[in-house]
Image (cartoon, rainbow, N blue to C red; front, side):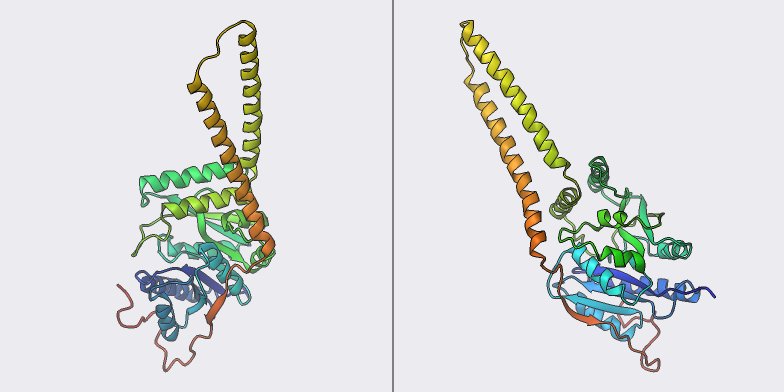
Length: 337
């Protein structure tokens, strides 16, 4: 008899009241189909992690939890950030799940691909990466910057899957070992490949956001990219060292030029070039100090060992009285758009 795993779908949420009803509906349909096809066991659930939302996100999660046996929830005490909220859900779910799928609430990732994840899991893979095969739904700027980021990370020596975000399946064994990484500066896209367990990829077309606005404006995207680079590579520091040697060599050449000019009686002119040189070297020094400070700041955060998140409330016990609870796929009035 084939063992049917208990699956938990972890969905981090931040101000997602507009899209949440449709997300609940689609993921409930996915779970219902997987259970019917005996790919997962009864008791599989969707875990919504409210990352300190300021809208009605948590109220909606409580509402769906009361009427839908698939829906469970975690409420963080304050906004901890997408990666910390996702990790909170993964570590919470691993205690009662055989495998966990993570997906964002905006429905840009294809929920139907979760079935393929489970097929690969049954084939013996501990990690299944969802790879965006088509990003035509993204703007040109977002697509270009995202692809440039993946190429830059690869060139810096970071093992990362091209066009993969956080849509993936992980086994309990993989999650148990992920928990051993006690890092405060989280970049899960770089951490998960370090586990080394058998993995594979599933390709899908990225969709447009179903409703609401993106929670990752340009500022947050750049900060996230910079965190990823500095958390997994010391190449920027080495680049500063190389630049220091090059500037030192140039200064030696300039000094020799000035000495030879003095001996030959040539007049040294050009205050403009002198000032530009001072400004250039000063700018490089400030850049180097800032970069070094960034790494020192990360060390400062790591050594304090503060918790990444604080769970305020958990909704884990689904209602079991079938006479009072409607079918999981029947949402409360006005649940769908």
